[in-house]
Image (cartoon, rainbow, N blue to C red; front, side, top):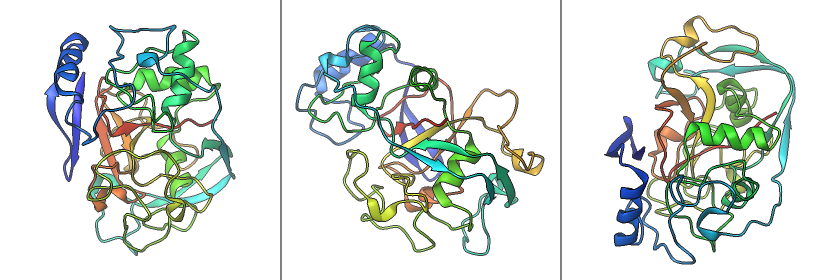
Length: 289
């Protein structure tokens, strides 16, 4: 697996393809993996597919079994891609900005939490995360999960990962704004980003940063996995109605800046790219249907 840090050039891998037993040893020695700045208190332990597996909650954490709320996103057009009229930080893979039409869908109001994911593990349908979770903070976003683990949870919940287009419409609405809340530059009040808390926060702590539809944490807290494979030129030929990304690929798209990310990565149109095996403390997801 990979443990990752997020910077202006995307995630820089600092610990690459280390087996779960070796990661467990490092966590035992250090108390945490040094990647999130948290103290690791409150029932810290090691989960991982090699230690716990399916059928038991991660590190013995208990789940309430509560489901998260979803938000209905109406059918219709929106501006997808960078809006050069309000954004001077456009990157080539965000261009051209164009009108896209989507069918109606629903998306989780917040990122999937540790509590929600632990219920899937307890049901024997999901494998445990590859790093320690704090059992006293189960409303934190689920982390240290791969793309397949995220897809597996969403399928168990009767949902799926959102497409890149669905994610972006839910984040910015129909008016082509730069950020979920508008065009004003981000602050720690609106998004948990680099220079704010120094770690992940429980979901839904920044209501003033909500999208036009009321979806929370679309900027900040966690970078989020989406269903699309990544192609830096995809927007040049993508369909204008319900695009679902390239038919195949080796890396997928991540959306929304995380708690380690600089302000430029909080923009609603910015795209990042990951390997399917990537997992980390600032990489999470939400589901759609």
